[in-house]
Figure 1 (cartoon, rainbow, N blue to C red):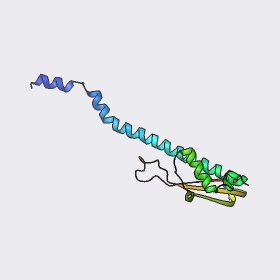
Figure 2: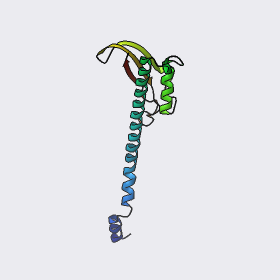
Figure 3: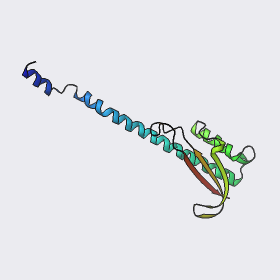
Figure 4: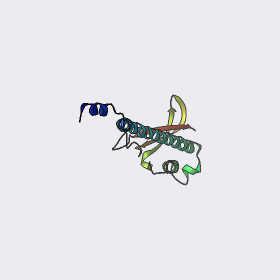
Length: 140
């Protein structure tokens, strides 16, 4: 190649956009998928917190939905399965206790604690999701 052809080839911008996209797309995709994963983890945590609160309320008011026909633990599992669409927690993950204090308030409370390792987090946590412990209390 002569000198003029080499200089012309060096100044050519054909394909520059494709090369730049190839360099940036990997980072962009990782950020997008990580954002989706983080959002899913936050949604799951919020839903499990709502399940804990609804179970605590059900036990505190003595509803037959969670005391006579099934245990409060099974009520929480059924509620979580309905809201999340999968069996994320089992009866072993749910504890129901009575307490005299709750978040600096005193009285008589029903406290529900759910511990779960959600199925989300496969990008952020590739082996197992982080164990989350969610607590809710409701006064008698």
